[in-house]
Length: 617
Ligand SMILES: [Zn+2]
Image 1 (tube, rainbow, N blue to C red):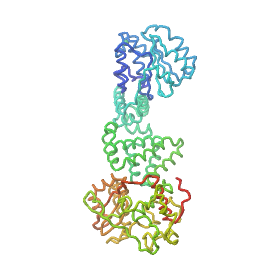
Image 2 (cartoon, rainbow, N blue to C red):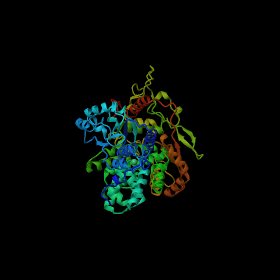
Image 3 (cartoon, helix red, strand yellow):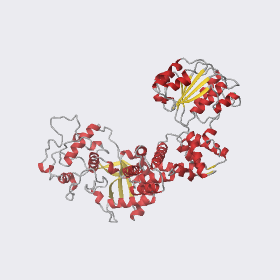
Image 4 (tube, rainbow, N blue to C red):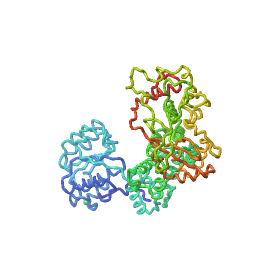
């Protein structure tokens, strides 16, 4: 390998050769062809995207001995001298090392009025111009205001937002975008071929993606990997150099998250750490993986624009199809928190573990009020809200059975009336909102009309609600930190849950057994099924409900109903049938504020308590 770095050796010498940035190139070429270039240009964009290369090509084209042309000849002495940096009329200044005003005066302000010695234009290329001090800016500003006709300024910056508006307004601005992985990969392949490297296609892909749009970084990394791998560069060489885990590892990790399998997720993380992967880079990989999943899942872009090899794409598409965009978005946010999270390895690992547990055991993240809300909602899913003045000895109200909506496979299933599925089944007056200020004071909890003993204990209230004598005592532990599903402290929402099938299994046991079986057999189907809530079991039929925001899962369930029935038969050892409904959201849904007030009232009633503070915890 030559001693000149690959990046310098393969710097673009013509506009034609420049990678990406077609819009910038077109405008500059037009200016050259028209013979009237602007006096000052501002090239903005991330590092390694071709700003200084473009500036040099432009300087050559302005001064080429063959005349002002859309492309420099690269043959004449001026072109060659500009290329090797020996032309005294083309000055390249790194603002980072010349921040003082004296230097700017010395290099630019004092000399700008002298005519060029040999070239057509004096060209000043100021790199990282945002690093100039304020006084340097001011000195430069005067020159920029009225530059002599023989001078062209090209300012380059990665931080245009740091420039004074007075500078911005005096320059013709061009924005350089990050190169796509595809553009970088093609360039790497070309360079490797010309340099005599055997660069594996996958290795080129990984290098291109990890360079994050910077061709310079990609070429520097190619050079590094060639230094230790020799002329034949494989996928594993690149992964080792970059400390990357790879797509397969990300697939495994995300699968564990999808299945809410905390143990598996921890195991995967441990494997990666043991194999020497860097957690910082790992979080970048996870973010990239989840971003791809999200884009695929909402079909936001054509998949081939993601620059992912076809064999990896198939697996990504499959994974995306088993997840909701909302869930992927949640993970993406959590993974992005990891990126900026930790500098030292110990803390980084802790943050990773916390993230994985949060994603696989959602209960740990609930605040107490939210948990209470869920519990009340679950109770209400089976029974109407408590009525006022209901005598303790009154016959327990039984939930009215109404025919549920036909499922999409045409099955009609009995459905328990609840607030969400049938808003009419429950009078709105029982959920007083702020507008409910009638003098009759129907506000429950504040002016209870029932006998005092009806308010004595949660279990008493539950009995009144029809939970029967076998009701278990109220939870002793602080609210909110136990598992929310299933919760042994709360009785099953329907008596049919306790009904034994002909196999003698309780509904809950049958459900758990089925879930375990499906998880073993088809992990994607399991990911669908875990989002359903068990309603009950009757004569060989398990009835489920999907929450209203899980319509995708519901549809998937409908499509796979036959397969699921077959699995149920196999898992439970007798013909079993699964039916599910999708919760619908009430059309006249109360406002969040109303809902909150109503919820607090219901909680007060249910637990015979008085809320002293319902502000978010
Ligand atoms: Zn030339």
